[in-house]
Amino acid sequence: MKIRSHAIKSLCFASLLALPGCVLFPQVDDNLPPIVVPVEKNELSTVVKNTRPKGSTESKNIDQVEEGPGKVPAFSNLKTLTADDLVREVLGRNPTLTAMIAASEAAWSKYPQAISLEDPNVGGWFAPGTIGSNQVNFALRVEFAQKLPGRGKLKLRGDKAQAEASATEKDIEDVRLQLTEDARNAYFDFHLVDRAMEVNEDSLKLLGEFKQNAEIRYRNGQVPQQDVLQADVEIGLQKERSITLNRMRKVTQARINTLLHLDPELSLPPSAQEVSLEFEKRNSEQLREEARANRPDLRSLEDKIRADDAAVQLARREFSPDYEALAAYDSFWQGMDKQMQYQLGLRMNLPSQRSRRYAALAEAQSKLAQRKAEHKKLEDQINFQVQEAYEQLKESVQVMELFKKTTLPAIQANVREAQASYISGKIPFLTLVAAQKELYLAKDRFFQVQAEAFRRKAALDRVTANIANVEEGKSVK
Image 1 (spheres, rainbow, N blue to C red):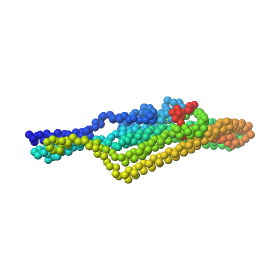
Image 2: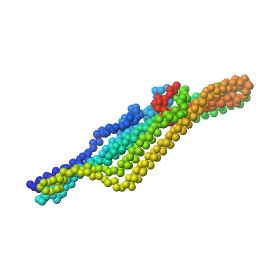
Image 3: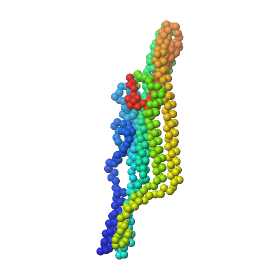
Image 4: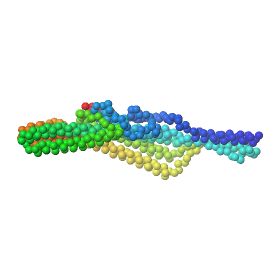
């Protein structure tokens, strides 16, 4: 009977030892939905929700991720394409922004990990020689241990994780600004090609009129056949330019579709005929102040400084010990009274390796100093970027006004006068052709200056983090 009693005790003990294994290594059902741990975020964490593209899901299974660009045009219901239409679609479709949002969510998931205690340890052992012994009782020990970090360490780890996660949110806004600028630049390249094609068509029509004038005067014996042949040469050159412009339009179309994560060959509606641009009313000092207040990369760097500061404080706390709470049931103590069966204890490390901790503290302090220097450097860069973009935009607006008020009207009048003078025989045909060339070159130059002005306005919006223009944009007629 005593042997059976010891066997029962051994069986119970084996079951007790198996219990921690069931807890620590459970069978996971792959069909269960993922567990979402609620994380307390600061007010900046709402950026993740606000910047999520419409129609996107919280997460995608790897097998469900789309492969390759889309095949359906993005603007099939539009007659003309505007810059604002393109910006909205790019912010909703471009995978770069989706990747940054996922990275931010991953960073915020580090917070509950940083503030959590380590898993407790459960152990047990017994003396096999006591099984069935007539001299001593069955000897068994079961132990439970929980590590406890020193005072304030968990909070500092959480602060560091939150600051790093907040920095990733600012990176999302920085990507939004860059994508907006890229979309606007791509649009105005597209717009420039459309306008150049219109200028080329107008030039062909005008050259056709010149050829008719030359043919009439040639039949009347007023000019040599060379005038007609020269007209054919100029028409051939313009048709050659049409081929080049057609290639340029397809390239800009492919660039836009790539930003939209679409097939490069998908068609796009024509760009708007006219665009309006008002010069920036704020002065450069106001724009620099706005940039320093709103630039997400500067705010991101400030969050990283907070994270590095928490790392310095955490390195200082490493000079204090960590603890481990212990609880045990012990039947190795023999005797009739069997005292000291239940035990409680506390264990701590001795932070004696101080040279390693001093080196870690010096490393954290150096990284913090580096980050602060980078912050000052970025402020200087922002001041320069804003001033440069402001002066460039100012130049473009002034040149546009010069073209509208002086250059284009004068050249158009010159062409009309040259055509009338040629018909009346006052000037040769080459002079008429030269006037026509000046006209289409001036128109091309005007549209180039116009496109450059809008690119510079997009650059100014980015360097000043002009969120209003990014979200809504100016009306494009």
